[in-house]
Amino acid sequence: MTRLSPARLLNGAATLLLSAAVSTAAFAADPLKIGFVYVGPVGDAGWTFEHDAGRKEMEEALAGKVETSYVESVSEGADSQRVIRQLAQQGHDLIFTTSFGYMNPTLKVARAFPKTSFMHATGYKRSKNVGTYSARFYEGRYLTGVIAGQMTKTNTIGYVAAFPIPEVVQGINAFTLGLHSVNPQAKVKVIWINSWYDPAKEREAAEALIAQGADIINQHTDSPAPVQAAQEKGVYAFGYDSDMTAFGPDAHLTGSVVHWGGFYTQTARAVMDGSWKADDTWGGMAVDMVKMAPYNKAIPQTVIDQVEAIKAKIIDGSFHPFQGPIKDQQGELKVADGTTMSDGEILSFNWYVEGVQGELPK
Image (cartoon, rainbow, N blue to C red; front, side):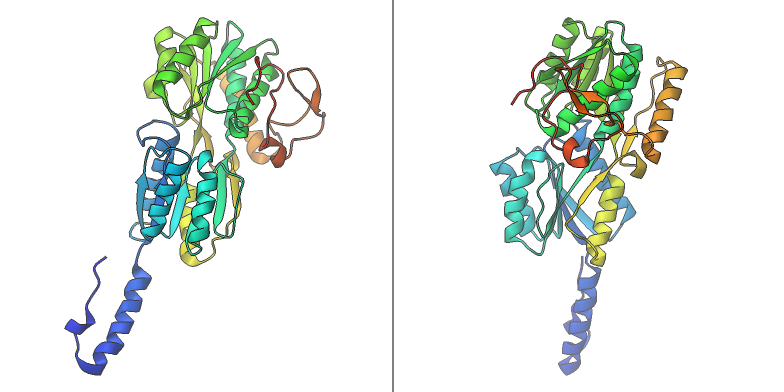
């Protein structure tokens, strides 16, 4: 922003008075500086792509009132702490750190910059100037499971997963519950690749699952490689985070899509008007934070109608994907009939539901 120099307008004592007034007005008009830290490249077509789409939506909604920047492909751990600190040192007023592994680095930097507001995605630790946010991904996951249960011919579904943390486990479980609600004989095979974004590993895992009989591939990783593999092998797939139809027009059935733009805009406004608080936001379909990608024409209309009816119940609160009865892999009743898991229980998932094969890594 270009600042006026009062000295060029007036002289003497009047100069000092006008200088103070113009300086105050200029300060008030300065845009809010907002920084983003991304774990993958903005072109990953998944997680980071959608966060960056949210950043752009916020910029458009608050044109002239915000100034944003981002750093992409930042490794979790020490490297992320360095990047977060640099953004704070550069005068960013609000910083979004968008991956689970940024949690402790965000908290450490925040202690040194108490006047900066921080928001950490998918985390559970907060402080006076660190809030957390996430989306109820599991709502869309459940719906994809309902579709998979009626589209599979082999009753084997493959799942390419990143890390065995509760966020990912809850998605696998929600998908499996949706699957079993219409097809109790179907099973889910999981391959963990221990990376959020590694197209080569994602493709390799998808191809391995297809070789094991999976005729539908799901994923909790960030690239479209599993969808592309499914397209090439002639099986179906569900994308994640963004609409991945373009990467497998025949294979891509639909997907659970995340929409961050509204939340980013709301948060920026709160910081600007002084109402921001370091609390937790966990939004789903009811607040437009989770959506479904377009449905593939291969899905029967009766199935789409069924899914849309369940979605409407999720939105109005009359149905919850994690309502009992729910059993674990060993057949033990974990959630009784007539009860629903609490948010705390969902956020700390460390067990598989009935229907998932294999052992959950520790």
